[in-house]
Length: 188
Length: 133
Image (cartoon, rainbow over all chains, first blue to last red; front, top):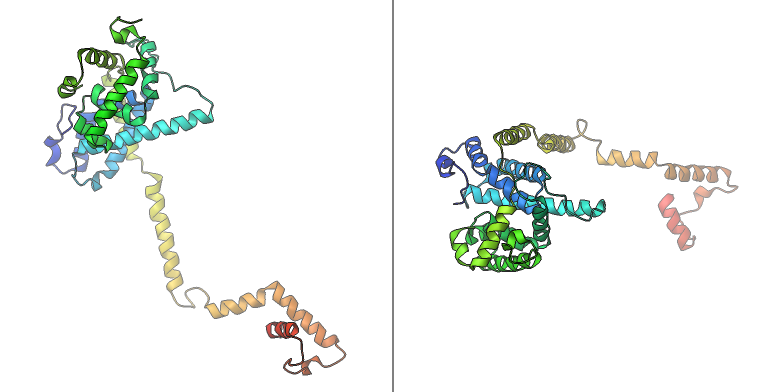
């Protein structure tokens, strides 16, 4: 079972109450959901929160139809990934419409401990990857899902996810080779 | 990155992924931000979707229309045969044809009502007379 927070879904599985299960789901996965979408959407905090909220809303409304064929968390993350991808598509269309050439910039928060320029480069490099590779990389390498869990979330075979991971890693290393922050100062 | 996945990468790849993950992360959610998130989510949950109101309303209207159509006349819609007559009588085009026929029969120097069944008429006139006369 996918777990990320203090409350395990097993603790409330017997309660059967929709609100109770939903509250536990939000409590356990709120932060991880926002972070995952933030990484998938190129570092846009408000968009990440909006998408995570949309996914929670959809999950709440669909909870009555949830048939326990997978864990509640797996089901929720499937919804979340779909929402994130749908948001990306919508943003791409909007960018075309408004003649924007680049994705929205990452949070320029001055309190950010990380370098915004590096973040921007990483976001752009991730953005260049095909959707399957980007999702697999973020899920497995950045969010700590196993290959099998990611395969279940993406509806793909584990072998396909492994192949996505390999290609994504090669592409990112090539794209970000000039960043000393990522290569440990070996290259300039 | 989980332990199993880490084993699939060489040392250099592991270091790259670790640095990438460290650099590319949002700031942690503060308690205030978390509370604002929950508050906004609760407000959105409390708000009824417009479709949840519109769909039952439209379904009700459709059901009422079906019931009204199923109920026999005089409570339901006008019977089809009456409706047909009304449509013919009300049709401007047909009324014009009848008026022209009345004018023709009254103004004609011969009694056109005695023209018989039309056996002597050419085919195209016969066809017209079958439609209008």
